Length: 298
Figure 1: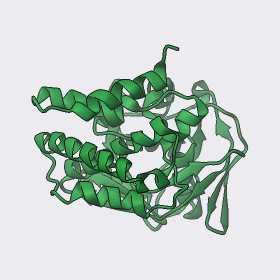
Figure 2: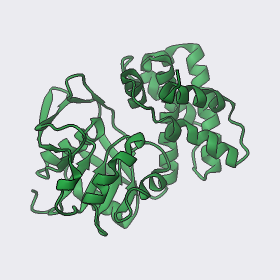
Figure 3: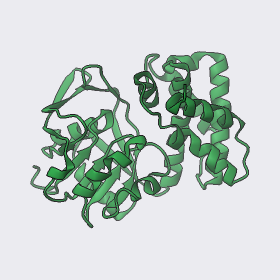
Figure 4: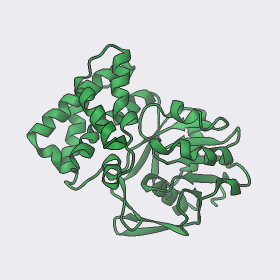
């Protein structure tokens, strides 16, 4: 453990995002406790030509946790939050800071009921990490998190100090979170088509994506996000500039037949739109399709 940072750290959900954060901490001498559903003696992260091995074990029984820790990185999908409640109860005390590495703009509301004792910090994850068929993770970019500029967030920033994970403390976190939500929302098209980023080079898909992004932008602004008119095109341009084989977590879940995060990534636009009397015609088509693709029946 780094002598300048004595806090005990746990990562709940050592998938693509959790493994990346665990690797960044391990490199800095702050190897975290790993907690998940599958027992493993180590994790592997491929970063370009580098291979980082994070020692385990991955613990699978929260009843064996003897005491709380000071920092928890919650990296399970939003669809798995309730299943992680036992981990949060075992790891969290009144002073524990829980950093929620999940998609969406409703992290505080979604996690609070499962974590009554910890101090919850929402986060925006800006790095592309993908699980591989052999259980390892491939990182395809720089590692960066955005957090609200609060006292608990500064605990997280200190935990990640001098690691390769850059932490931005945002004074207008709401705008940052909604901008990322727009990016996640339009990625839902990839789950419906079973296609990767290259699909956005089609003129018809790029027109649909841009129209959907403008619809999401109107809802984001009604929620108080300060986002300019250029944001939809900038997000589309990012997809167009990505490698054609770049995937997204919701596509990975669709390919694996797992439940999709359709509500926190897409359904929220429809729900918040109705609350503000903003028409969301594209959402009203996409959301039922994503919900059916996730939950059935059929």
